Length: 281
Ligand SMILES: CC(C)(COP(=O)(O)OP(=O)(O)OC[C@H]1O[C@@H](n2cnc3c(N)ncnc32)[C@H](O)[C@@H]1OP(=O)(O)O)[C@@H](O)C(=O)NCCC(=O)NCCS
Image (cartoon, rainbow, N blue to C red; front, side, top):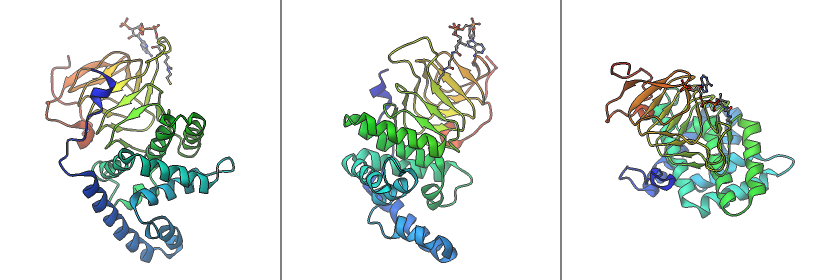
């Protein structure tokens, strides 16, 4: 299967624009409530969300606020972020699905406002989307600057050339590393300290290919150009050095199949961290 084939359009029937409008309306309502609840944060909430005209604008403002620095000002960073989200409708649609994914999968998340303002995984992923756009505009220097700032600020290192689908949930984000030729399909969940890296022996296309609906548990290391099949579950601290069949759980160092999952189970969506059933193959 090619990298292109695993990045399929989302399965949901709802259109991006409808979903974006709904999420934006809810985010604004949550911002209004938070502004009344916490006067000390009112200025930030007003400027970041209520003064903005779209979710893309608000996201550009928030990312720039956190990623701007002495090398590239907040104003320049905001301009870049906005260009990326406005020029590439996929980037803003992906951001909406990422936000929805967090709300659906993270038991600590009760409203869109929290990941939008605070969660490092969301910020790192959307910052990556800006860097990815720059990379494909031939602006590698700026793309690498954005990658470097994301790494400094959020402790999460994603190469701008990596290809990441939508509805992706990066929980906590600390210590997550995603290499240059990695492909991550839609609806994947990635916990802290996951590495999608090379094995040090291959060159060129040398990073993992993660298919739809995979759950990568805390500390999992997937090394080399290996394929993790749809709906697979990678256990905490597993070191994956070979292809993982779809709908299986693998664990250990090196990782071995320990159980099978039903084809209709969606571990990345349910965040079910039990082994599944099977015979400990
Ligand atoms: C450890 C490493 C160097 C081994 O490479 P190698 O010598 O070519 O070994 P192979 O991949 O052929 O594996 C040889 C055996 O060791 C096992 N093995 C490989 N890596 C292992 C690890 N980290 N722990 C335990 N066993 C390991 C393999 O499963 C295999 O066992 P088997 O023969 O019973 O099937 C390599 O797997 C590795 O970890 N490279 C570094 C990757 C890295 O840090 N990347 C950074 C990404 S950002």
